[in-house]
Length: 407
Image 1 (tube, rainbow, N blue to C red):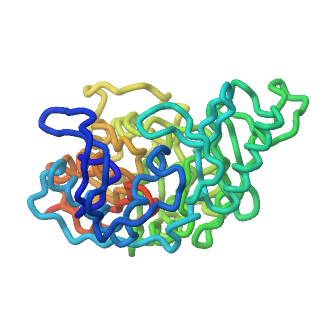
Image 2 (tube, rainbow, N blue to C red):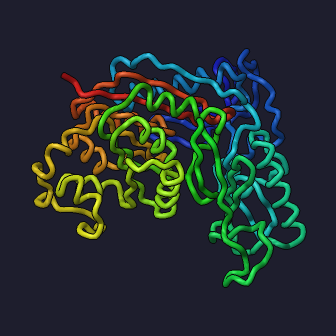
Image 3 (spheres, helix red, strand yellow):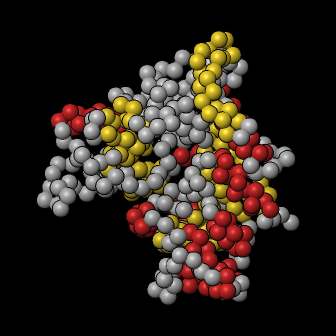
């Protein structure tokens, strides 16, 4: 495995480490460059750990990401035959990131991203993948460093652009760009922003998870929802409601489940401001909520006054008869878990629930393949597979997998 290589390169490498029968190497010299190789425009390439595909032309990047997905499905997912995969390219291969996290070394006064394979900060003046608004924010932060105006206990900053404003927060929950105030920590609360995606307005702030490529997000939503409609939909890991709002316009009843309290509050606010009253948001651990649903039915799972949040529910408490009619009538279950994928208890809960259709949105092909293997073993089959290049110049890729119950 040769980092920063291009398919077809002839290179002299140094073996850095071995794991089992796999050797990991870095390039000492490019003897014969591949036709797919280009000169990376970023001066930090190779040192910064952010972008690891800049040495490839864009067509080669897309093909490499498609092959990563196929390889994971074959090798990890155990699929003998991988379904056809469509890849949607980004409209902008540069200056696309509308959300970012910058690492901060207060002692060295360095701000940027971690260096590849280390926790040392690569001091970045200009980032070629940032949206112009975030590049300006990065420059303002660097100016505050020169002024000595940033708190020394901050370790990183998260920022996201809205339709008109930018929200930024440090790891202590403060807005580092705000002027000192009379609050206990001396800094103002984090600013909320509004982002319009596909005609829906979302309130959120930099503490919230949201897609980083706003240009491609509408196509991602279209692919995830397709022509879906019906009576009941469940969304797991719903965040601030990116998919919840369009789901509520297609289904009679929608339930969103999110473990983060702040994100849950934003999801409820976004539904209320859209005048969507047919969706409910539950702030709970996803695995625990699925077990509660099976134990008590929809009414109990939605009423936290009668069903307090717990870490787990014993198998003896899980009954198949609770609210049976509603429990067996889930038309669509959509999940968009973090990079680590869905934990085993979540997959088990989905298989017991047996929704008619599943849509799995993933930012990591390896954990997607692991979870799809379990879902397929539980009686589902992949009906459609699509990929979106939400992260040009990196190996990361977003995948949408649709599954249906086998006859």
